[in-house]
Length: 302
Image (cartoon, rainbow, N blue to C red; front, side, top):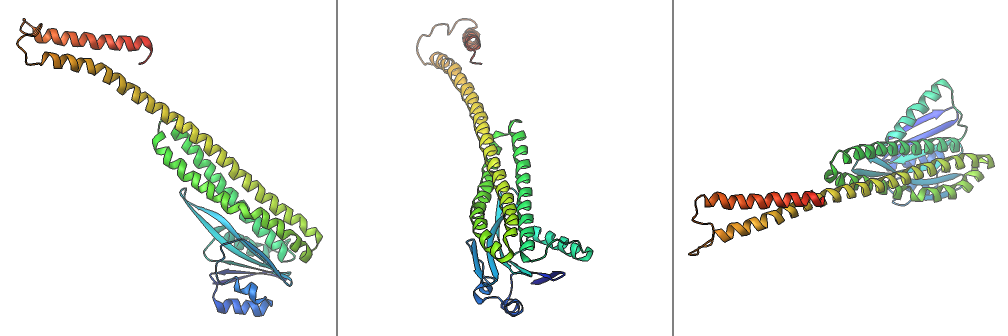
């Protein structure tokens, strides 16, 4: 599917899963190099920057959050020209859809500051990084919810929640790793095409990317602290359970021993046969039980 947006002399072509016919038409209209056009037809699993004549091909992968436990990675191909920008993607990406609506409104109102494809590219990539910042805020709120549930005694369930959230944060950071290097490599090509003053826009994009990376780094640190806290609380609760079970086993063992002794099939047993022998044995067992609990309480084990 091809969508065309225009502002004065600037054109933005947005492609979603383009067909060979659409790519051929764009090659003729914008005089694209065949190698550059070929990149639009199939997904590329590595970030890439390539310049052919006055056109610059940029391939970046942006992580996108779907729920808390599922992470998807979207590829966006950019072809940046002097008076046009072509974007290719293989599924719908909400930030680009929002950017398209804003672009159309600015075109109608005439409120546009973009004078060439580089300005449009810089504005679009900045909006994509800002969307990633919003995803980071969503993860931050999720970590806050997990923290509240941890201190409400739901440590066991939070082990899975922390693991799933940790995987998402890890995947986000891994997807963003090539971006800084790609942007640094892109700056010389962009400044040669659009002039030295365009380096300001590239540094601005790189700064936005760095802030997003730092935000996810802080999220990872918060996650690790929550994980340690959750493990400590879980370990403490398990230790308490084990202590109670150990004390109960220690208390019931001598009682079981007494019951076994008086249940022996012998010709003579002390107390057995006396009036109220059952209650005497039960009294001895009750006295031992109370004595054990008083002793444990005195030692601070209960």
